[in-house]
View 1: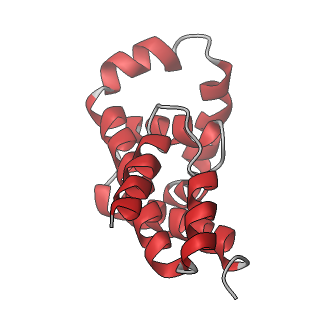
View 2: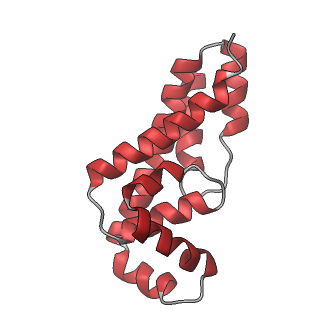
View 3: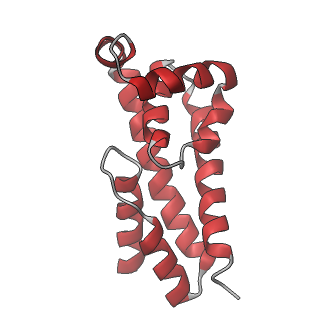
Length: 139
């Protein structure tokens, strides 16, 4: 159980503003335990909860973040914003993408989204990623 808790916490931290990669730990645990579904549950739950935290940061920090980043010169945010406006909730399926995924989730929070559709799309994207990553490790 300690390994699953570690995976959950690591996945949570990896999907917040801390630059960690959960993939090596996840692959190791799936490979050694040969249990894709339990590892996938803990990794995707932690990762999704971390992204929900980022959306919440975007929602609650909206005035400050908009002043600091959107009106500023942050080129990553300026590149991501049109995609968020064009694609809406389904863009959260790509929240797992390295480098831009976490930024995209915070910026998405700035749009004051409804939380349930946000959670749904985040969970689908994160879970699909972990299933795909671990599928070839389990015979």
